[in-house]
Length: 436
Image (spheres, rainbow, N blue to C red):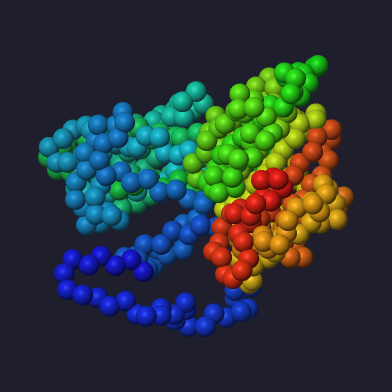
């Protein structure tokens, strides 16, 4: 609940109930097993609730945008009350929207919501542009104004209709532009309005599909690790500082041997895309980072890096593993755990106390009296042959495995949660830097 008080007084209830109705345990369990897609809800349009997910992106066309000198006008039929317009008295204007993305690699359809008012011949030319990939023009016109068989038909009945353009994004991170113009031969009798553009993903490409489109292989003779000593590449996502990476990294190497990449919303920025760039490191640390902005090239290079002898450390969080779009990518093949899906990070009923596992390094010398605790963790399962070096209660907290000549370590815990009793959040525990 968020309260903005401008005058008067509102008394917050002493104890706000967690639920207005007791949850159905059966439905809760079903939900946890679901895909966990993000849903879009418009409280003003309850009939539309739940129709949008991570496979649908909505881009308003309310005004002008970069390279599109359009203007907006109030329209009660537009879903948000505003639409781009070629108004009466105007013969031709620019319309559209630029930089709609970035999108994951895959097949898409863009749907333009358009309304034509009044009689007369009208047409629209839309340029689908993905810089360096696609550049084509698609014609639309009212029936009496069609000049070619290829022109799509515009309906002039004073109502909004969707008009579709299908396209392919052959790699991650592309942002299509729909740049067009609306025309008429009778500017005094009609007008053209565009409400929004919705892009829907028809198929998301897996890394196996992208490998066929973009085969890559490490150059002959290229070895992992450049200069003598330890070179570490760290990608810092959300909660990186809570994990105390700032304390841990100097314990591994001098500050000049550590390269940092920053991340917003769990996606890595400027991750190396070439073998020569990544193979100069010995270890890569991904802290709460997903797969998307690594892009296919970065993921493939990272996989080959590990198999050639590199180390990979993955720290859990809301934007990684099963919640970081790693399923179906080459990164999933590297992991020593089986992912659970979209709602993979779950809260433990009671704090889970860390303790040494049977496999991996010997943590026996650490002081466990502080009861280092985990509150939220990834519900993953170790793969056959993997070693569980650290436990949270009876659940795996650190799972490692050899992959080719390299080694991968996954921390399934997350730096989230509040202290309940006498335990210590694991990231505040004095032994945590040593474990990491």
